[in-house]
Image 1 (cartoon, rainbow, N blue to C red):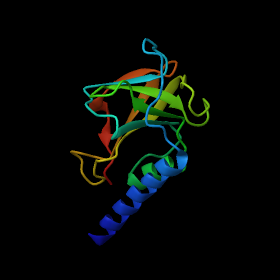
Image 2: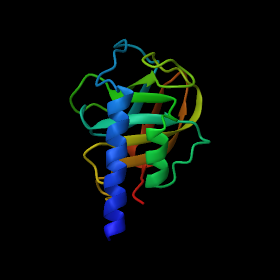
Image 3: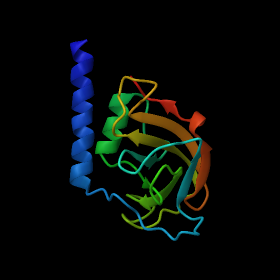
Length: 156
């Protein structure tokens, strides 16, 4: 039991440091009527301070907590998304992180990618309120629509 506790807190600390040192914005400006660079998650209920999404190439291993933490802290993501407009919205504005777009620019990637939802108040070992959920999503011009049910908790 102690090993799980240590790994969980180490992972949370790594994630917090990643946000601190990468200068992650808290809001992204995107044209209100734009269909470019948006991820819509149907059935999703979240809020600004606690949820964001990361888009990774399919080649990046995201199987398990350690792999997800390593990918996030090493900045292997191609795009980063924040909830648009505040409140309990289900649309994320996607901005470039590395690779396909410059940091801060609207992401316009096309193809199939791995997506991680990060809930900063979630628990790593709790499938009901997980810190991480993972899905494979097809994007066109940086935009996609996917159901929350397509995301599986990453809890071990």
